[in-house]
Amino acid sequence: MLTTWLDRAPHPELAGVVNGYAGYRVEHHHAGVHRGLPIPYLTMLISLAEPICSIAADGTLNDGVNALVGGLHDQAVLVERPVLEYGIAIDLSATSAERVLGVSGYDLHGRAVALSDLLGRSGARMVERVRDATTWSERFGAVDAELRRLLRSPRRHDALVDAASRSLIEGRQVSAVAEDLGWSRQHLTRRTRAATGATPRQLLRLGRFERSARLLRAEGSDGSLAVVAHQAGYADQSHLIREWRSFAGCTPGAWRAEEGSTSS
Image (cartoon, rainbow, N blue to C red):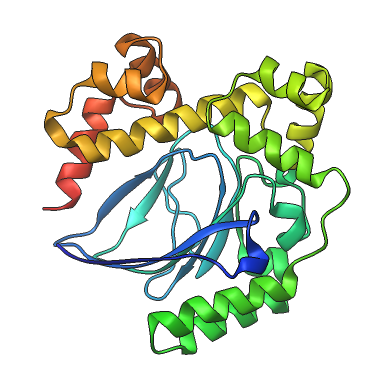
């Protein structure tokens, strides 16, 4: 497997809205299926090769698109993995949907939507500029410019909701976040659900799950699940496995085996 992976920070004007960009080019020995794990932020993907095709529950392929936006979701999404994966991934903060996409995170929750359906001509222009570019620097610059063009001024309460969501994703307990803001738990729940589609408890769980996935990748096939569970913030290894079955639809060990098979 041949892999190119380049990370890039967004323009300072996009701080707090865009977490970062990644340019990727991965050549596999054969096509397969990728398990897209739930993550605590929105993902925008622009393909420079084959259209992105998700797999429906009955095993059929949904219509492929060249660019899409995925909202927060609670279960893994199966995606067709072509021999060549080539494109840009843009990670948007959990509360950023309204400011750059013009829709609420609640409306995107559990969904993957074609970029052109959300942004119309603006989305098509972003894809065109990225595809016309000849270097990674030009591609990142094109995304930067188009997202800055789309950026809306924050509403008065956006900063508080964003700070609360980030704290929850980082592992701070729901009651502590509500107390810090002087909000009731019910008010915190209403605000985070309207902005992200997820409850505070769900954001907390998604953040912990993502940490465990990062640790499992770093630990490799021989890493201790008990150690990963502790470092990610789970009560114990059994808690880790239960959450993986819930979010990923498989155990950490099964996912490790899948990840290993994609490199062959």
